[in-house]
Each structure stands twice: as structure tokens, then as C-alpha cells.
Length: 236
Image (cartoon, rainbow, N blue to C red):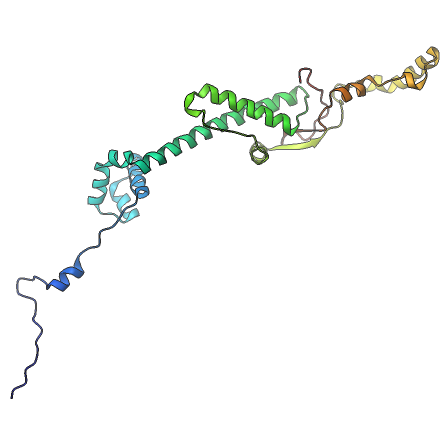
């Protein structure tokens, strides 16, 4: 008996593929994250061309148009609103911090000009005071911001403004060195003529330092190599 062989049916002349080929040819829908959508909108806002955005992100013109037409809905979505809120707070905090540090650097320069030494605690206290003042002037929106003037912050501030720490060497700038050389003989004469004992002689300057102790180090800008002399602030 004649053999019977199964035959594959070719595609019809109309070009309609079989059901299996139709399924395999369907394009997989691309899921675009909220972050990518926001990036696309940001690029549009910056004036970037749609064709360049499409090439960079692998998107079709239709997808780009859909995202652009739904910009308001995308930006109003809860996750996006939270993201924008955090960004706004971050920018506000950054602005406050930058302004405070600028004022603080000017204050440090002023203290150096007045020959007033600065300790780490003094700089931290001034930084916090300036930050709180700026935050209060900024209004209610920035009241949640906090600043502790931590040691880590100070180290970053010091590097940014090129400050370095030096050892104090006494009140050289304000001292009359010529008179100081003559004073021992003059003092000896007073002691002998007055009949004073060594226990009755005091260094008033050192007594003052014990009463209001000065920092042994201070902070100056990188351009200033030395701090020849400093005085304690009268209102500290």
C-alpha cells in the first residue's frame, strides 16, 4: 500500500503566518521605571531633543510622546512627590549649610584679624549659632532641618576652606620687645628699693590667663603661615 507521509503546510499566499509564529513575533512590552520617566522629563525640560533621548535610553518616539503628554500625572504620583519633597529639603539644607559656612569663614578671618584665638569648640558653637539664625530667617519650611556641628562636618569644612591648626606662641604681636628687655633690671631695682620679697611679686598677665584660659591652638587660612600673636576676647 502506498505510504502516507505527513506534509507541512506552507504559509498561505496571503502572507498570514501560523498561530505559533504570531505568538512568537509579539513584542514584549517594555516597563519603564518612574525614575526613568522623571529622567526623560528632566531631559525635555533641559531642551534635549527627543531623538537624542530616544537613542540614549532606547525608547521609541511613541513612548516618549506618551511620557511627555502625561508629565503632570507622573510628577503627581505619590512616589514621585516624595522624591521631589526629599530633593527640595536636601537643596534647602544644602543652601543653608553653604551660607552658614561662608559666614563662618568670614567670622574666623575677622577673629584672626583681631588676634583672637579659636578653639574647635568655639568654631562649632559659632557654626551652630549661625545655622540656627539662618534657619529661622529662612522660614517655617526649614524648621525640620538639624545641624549638630559634628567633628566630621568640621573636618570637611576645614578642608574646603583650607584652614590649618597652629600652636600658639603668646602675645608676640602686641608685646613691646624693647621695653621687655629693659624691664628685668627695672623690676629688680623696684624690689630692692621697696624691700619686697619674692612672694610679693606676681605676673599679672599669667594671673589673667589662669582666670580666663586662652586656647593653646587656633585656626587660620592656608595662606597665613603663622599667627604671631593673639589676645583673648574681652567679651568671651
